[in-house]
Image (cartoon, rainbow, N blue to C red):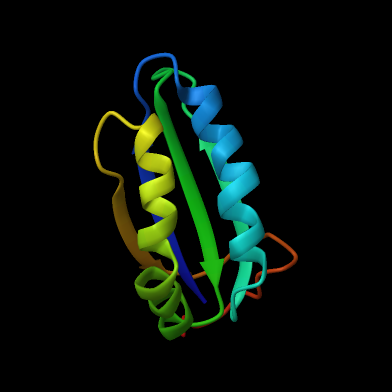
Length: 107
């Protein structure tokens, strides 16, 4: 399993719009991507303009394909609500307690 974490900093007062855009535009596209497993959206409790998304993928290759083919256009849609460019980090999933994510060696 493989994870992509995207760190978003919204423009002041635009966190709600950013979250709505993620829900309406990003999630429907993610759900139909090959290898997509789950998406978690986190809002900071101490930084009101910070949102993190955590997407889980079956393989690194499937996540990278999404990153190359779909993410650039989605990022453009989100930029209207952002203060800075999103920061993407990737990780191998070592384990998880989420039912949809099997524990074990990363892909």
